[in-house]
Amino acid sequence: MVKIGMVGVGAISGIYLKNITGLFQEIEVEAVCDLVREKAEKAKEEYGVPKIYDTMYDLFADDEIDIVLNLTRPYEHYEVTKAALEAGKHVYSEKPLAATFEEGKALVELAKDKGLMLGGAPDTFMGAGIQTCRKLIEDGFIGTPVGAAAFMICRGHESWHPDPEFYYKHGGGPMMDMGPYYLTAMINLLGGVRGVTGVAKTSFPQRVITSQPKAGTVIDVDVPTYVTGILDFDSGAVGTLFTTFDVVNNGQARFEVYGSEGTLLVPDPNTFGGPVLLLRQEEKEFKEIPLMFDYADNSRGLGLADMAKSLETGRAFRAGYEQTLHVLEVMTAFERSSMARAYVEIESDYQSAPAMKHNPLKGVLD
Image (cartoon, rainbow, N blue to C red; front, side, top):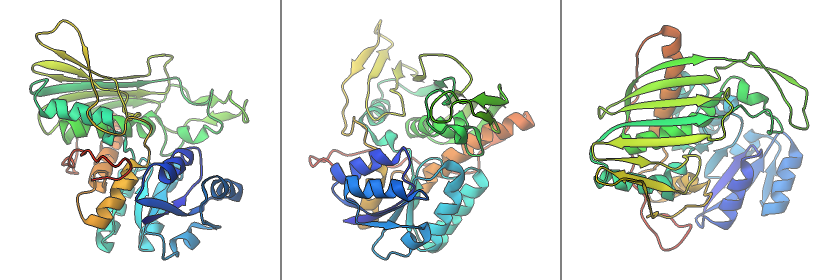
């Protein structure tokens, strides 16, 4: 068993703990740490976690821990991951890799220097939905891919999230929050990005929280909340990505891939399942395609289990830093392009990792 040390026991930790303890058979949680000890105590009691540490440095010093799972807030990812790497631990981080491209590059260089694995979320691209889309594209069902378009539209998190302020601070915003899902799926389906053009703005300088327990609190918005961009893929395909926290719309997610012989409607990349819809040139309507891979339910932690398998066997890690760094650079390039009013070239390289393989033992990866 590969042993995991979790730093940060916030809202997303529940599904990780559930899946690590109940689904994935080759990893286990050895310890948890949170600034609010009550959260760590609750995780220990509910999921049988053996150890609680008061500080992340105490957790990093535990020789039994193989991988640190960084579930802190986006603006904290860099410092936590850096400290874990410096302590000699492999790190799997929630998205994004860091709050800036410069921080991301520094983490990758540190991991390389120390010979450690580094990667992270999102791992939804490994689920049944995106993997089915990848197979359809690779098998030629839409011909040669020529483009893609994706939209993540909502009015923000202050009406429902119990503590939404960090979504509007450094490391937050719709692109940094939701962009990783869409871009990770896009590059897995269409390949790397060589350049982008973007426009970004902050539509509302302040937000009022209406959810409990902080209803009435005013948030100063420090990040762009309306970001749209064009992606120039290495393959020659052209993509469009639009993310916003400023628009009232009940059709939050839409993701399409266009080919010379057909169009593919990709499922919400924030999910692991379907539906997958295909329209061929000779057909008159979209047809739903059966999912051809495992992990259609909420399988967060799948990438962590894949990292553990890679650590044990030496095979390719599907959610490694080549992917998370490339996604981070593209996301931040939209704002740089907007500020410069110019096309921005992408310097990081990306090659998609191997597709998923079926294993009849659920929770055991290939």
